[in-house]
Length: 280
Ligand SMILES: [Zn+2]
Image 1: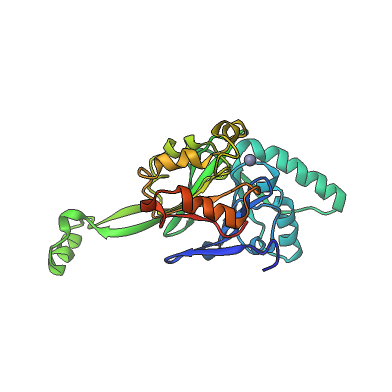
Image 2: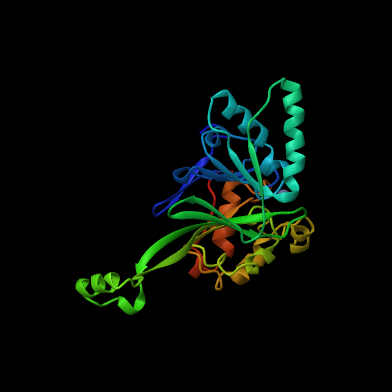
């Protein structure tokens, strides 16, 4: 596979496609819902998506914004929507204005500043919810939620006839369940994990783990606003996610070395849950 094409990771019905390598590039898309978490340098697999959720303004996560805007203009696509920390809106807007000057062309785009706990609707059954993270600049993580209508608990076990009658009486027979499907951390220290209760309940947790072993200390990781695998391991019992997918692993570890560290260091009972995102 050519560099920058990205790799696909699947679990049950969930499909992710992207790349993540510490300091170099991070963009992980959910093609079925036409959005991406971060945009790296604006790779081809991102160009037809509709929405982009930017965790923070570091270049390895956000440099692709102007390129995606220009490609969409060139292909006469609808202008893309970029969600990002509020402090990033104005500087990125200035960058676009400078680029408009360079090219003598005016671009259509929309930058939306987000706050923690904000909800962004994707479609009738899906939305994104914003959670705070801890990095060296303003940063957020994002969770994809799915809603399911279910018969209210007290009505379960009743006959179809009785349920119809209840509905005819004007009773609300359904209740909506909100299921956190995929959380994406961007770059963060371990503190994000307790910032909101739904994060550790997400079915799939894409979390950064920049350093994996004693080549770097926890202090080294924290100094740069990152997480060390040593900090994740003690929380594995607490994290309820069916899959914990490590992203943003340092390039000092080859794929083989990273996999070996996971095999050696993750307790046996958690081995089936912890994976490395395949695209780096
Ligand atoms: Zn960063």
